[in-house]
Length: 180
Image 1 (cartoon, rainbow, N blue to C red):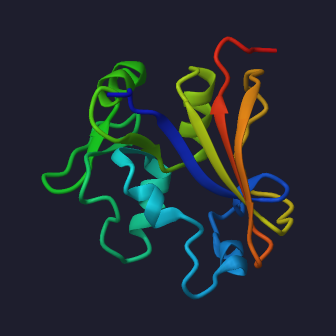
Image 2: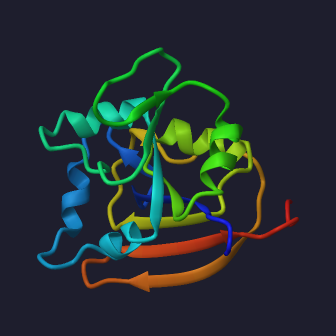
């Protein structure tokens, strides 16, 4: 049995933003096309657990839809003490310990945003795979996927897929022991 991977699956504008300054995500609708989910549902079949930042969780809940990850364990990463009796677990403990525990379970660990969590895990060198969908637009400002404080890391390109809408999906795996 192979060990699970920690996978970031996220979309960003061509200039590197995952949301506008006010959290607006409408730029994502530029690539909406009936019957096209860009591999998302197939990806979800590989997921055994989900990590999500608190701000992303609050944004998702503001849509007025049921929480999307009810079928797998989900951890909302937060610095605040909070828990719900029903739904995801709010977690403010050791991220490395949580990740190592989740990687022993069946299915990959899906990092479902946001930028703070992605960057924290990147700096901690805990991300095994990046699946980044690039939306063909510039939004100019907002929430950057990659922060200034990052780490140099060389990745292996696994797959590039382009779609009629102009979206390009890039998949990279960690390249062991290959740091710049």
